[in-house]
Image (cartoon, rainbow, N blue to C red):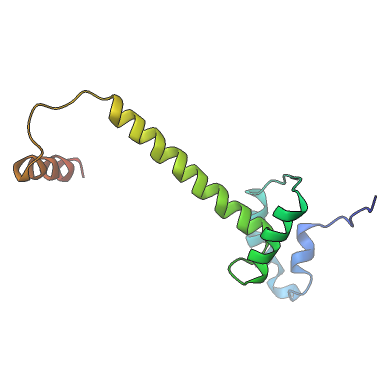
Length: 112
């Protein structure tokens, strides 16, 4: 089994002039403190697909691509949850006509 070379986030700023390092260190802290690492195993076919998406230029890394997929899945799950809550909510008696939406807009405007 091949061993990977260890990588430090500080290596991302090796090319930064010393005078800019405090700013670079600050930026690095914001970025890397918010990230955590997760290793996943993919069949070769999926790995090749991810790599093709990155090489086509839409994403800068496989991590960025996977993060985008996960964000879309979060949105899908949230939307599904809202739809289910809506289906389970009681029906209203009044029709959903122009007057109904005018009252709705007024209530929303008052909450702002």
